Image 1 (cartoon, rainbow, N blue to C red):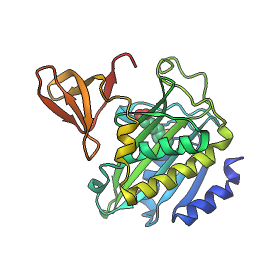
Image 2 (image 1 turned 180 degrees about the vertical axis):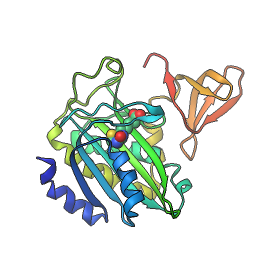
Image 3 (image 1 turned 135 degrees about the vertical axis):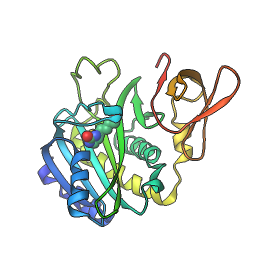
Image 4 (image 1 turned 90 degrees about the horizontal axis):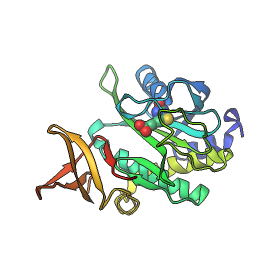
Length: 251
Ligand code: BTN
């Protein structure tokens, strides 16, 4: 199916109260969502989907490799009252993708805190959540998701960690539709924590992280009610990580 011919996706999103905008090629669906939020101030959620991105963005200023027709690259723009109300959204989005991948491809991915999805030891999905406030104070959050469905030939700098589901990229619109409906449902029910904990690949593992004290190591021992990662430090004290990156030893 071609992106310009995804009526099924359009219809099912419409039923969930979400508008759809599609692009053959764009710089970044997150950047486009930001531009539209600022210029049009939509009051309904909009989903932006692209076949390929020329400047896909990841967390920490990284780029996101978005090979044409090989993955699902999309951003959901959600009008919200306060950006702070969406603190758990990043974890909720990971659970939504996990459930969608299982429903569409029958594959059991694992979640690496905060919201990367791994399969067969490689990262197959990244999620970038961003907040936007327009010039008159309307707030939005953007949930940007990139899933490598059939991508191969990753650039040298990411080929050690990036992987693909090795699945049928022709099902990408089903995957997108399933992810968005799961995400909206989880935002209502708030029933995401048990899957998030159960699918975690970091619990009971040694992790390395960076905070105000610099570079630290510890053991990931739990995930709290808002998705924070509880880490037991070598001196026996505990800390809770709320954001940032962690590294796993021997992933
Ligand atoms: C990460 O792994 O650091 C997050 C990657 C997020 C990539 C997706 S692809 C769709 C959306 N548009 C972007 O520019 N980024 C997100």
